[in-house]
Amino acid sequence: EVQLVESGGGLVQAGGSLRLSCAASGFTFDDYAIGWFRQAPGKEREGVSCISSSDGSTYYADSVKGRFTISSDNAKNTVYLQMNSLKPEDTAVYYCAADLYCSPFPDYWGQGTQVTVSS
Image (cartoon, rainbow, N blue to C red; front, side, top):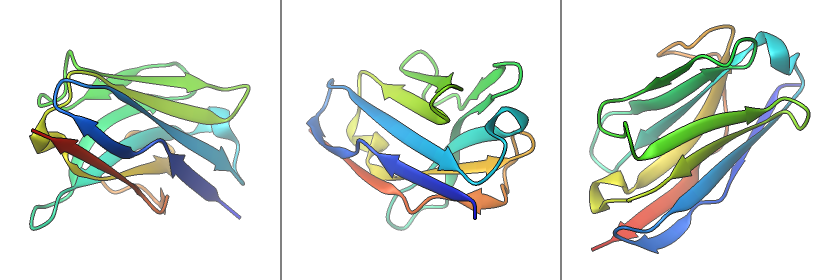
């Protein structure tokens, strides 16, 4: 059974940092790409970042470039999203998701973790 479990969300002041983790199981981690998405109340889901576990290639949305960093620890089957210089507009539920490549519609999803940035 495929499982993706996010952790690391919370409340932080603007300008602060958080690191999200996505622990994966139930599939061959090295064969998949892991993406981070977010959805704020009343807004559409947005792709934030993605990493290919096989070659380490990465993708970032323009809104987070230079502030967020995605990384992968293949030994731990875990992907991280380091979020720095957080802004109130980064407030959302953050989800990790898995597919064979970085896709806007991945097959597998975690349950999400709330990130709230206060001004």
